[in-house]
Amino acid sequence: MQETRQHFSSRLGLLLSVLGIAVGTGNIWRFPRIAAQNGGDLGAGAFLLVWVVFLFLWSVPLIVAEYALGQKGRMGVIGTFARVGGRSMAWLGAFVALVSTAIMCYYAVVTGWCLYYAGGLLLRPLPGSTEAAQQFWDGFQGSLWPVVFQALALALAVAVIWTGVRAIERANRFLIPSLLVILLVALVRALTLEGAFEGVRYLFTPQWSDLARPRLWLEALTQNAWDTGAGWGLILTYAAYMRREHGVVQNAFLTGVGNNTVSLLAALTIFGTVFAVLGAELSRAEVLEVMRTSGPASTGLTFIWLPQLFARMPMGRVLAVLFFVGLTFAAFSSLIAMVELATRVLMDLGLRRSRALVGVGVVAWLLGLPSALNLTVFGNQDFVWGVALMLSGAFVALAVMRYGPARLRAETIAVNAWDWQLGRGWDVLMRWVVPLEAVVLLGWWLYQAGVVYAPERWYDPFVPYSVMTCLVQWGVALVACYLLNDWLVRRMQLLIPVQTEE
Image (cartoon, rainbow, N blue to C red; front, side, top):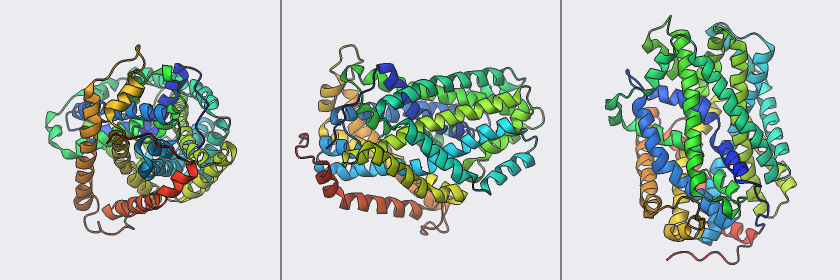
């Protein structure tokens, strides 16, 4: 068992690193599109309201739990689950780790896209039309450049965290403040455009009838899981390196609220830009259709439309390059956390950091190749493992339940007098509300996937967006993790697990 002896040097370094987990492409690439898709004719304010509700009913409670579990277990995800929840729960931790690792494999592809666009738009003219933008995208996807830049993204992530947690801290001390500055510059420029505030008005105007749509609630929850990194095991991994005096509750709230603030900044920038540039020539319905049309693998708004919109703006080239540099920073800060999670698991299994990192980088590149070469495979992986985050969140809650929420709170959360203190409300959220949210929304999603997404061939695992493709891939992962449970425990030498609550 390799219990961590490295620590973040300061609370600021810890917080910036965890914000690096939370702030990713989900904030900039995904959130504006999801907000537009779930807005009504009048506005997207109802979606924003539910999104904020789930921040405090799903994300923040799970972030608190991950901070507490990581500080208690002082290991990676699998070791912490086994140590805190008992030996029989190692396989659940393995599934949480596997979901984040599966996401890492295709997330490196997205990071590569961002790198390519940041450099490409700096070196060549911005596309002035949809056809030119599509040609730029198709030319990129039809080449081997996605594979090259996927490898480059992984190689950079491995190199950055080669020496451990201090390197992660140094990287995020640069990446996160730089990202915030870039977003603020882009936001100010977008809001100075004529017609931009029409987009702002739409974003915040609620259409209350939208609250009756179950899909809106599911989208708000899954977006929160994507936005904050809650339930991924990533925060748990970083928390293994935190000092006890850094506290839990304030950091958790700052992580969740800071992350959602970045999402709103990105949405304001993109809604303002799209409405300002297209509002003069298209109706509101047509503008919204542009924002809602996701394109292949959800690339339409970010990689097809935004470059040509920037081309129509004064100083658009500068803004376009800044936007994709910011998107690259966001993607990269999250990618290094995913690489560290997988590396930490292998270190717990007995590998040296150098060997573990090289192994993670090579395997992630190989497993991510199909997603780099085929957008349908990419879309399938995003679909399958993105929804699996609800299972991961439920498993984190189960580990807390097994140990005892009140006991965990007393031993890891209530030990710092300066930190905010949680009452029994958090216990109730972790024991009842979070699991219930996961069960109800996952059940509803399975029903919707069967009758809406791929109703004619829901039973075919080879249909990219069918129910069965999820159930088969989840099932294989769960069975493999369960069968490996005892081996994992023996390998980590967990001889004396923490006593669990009866």
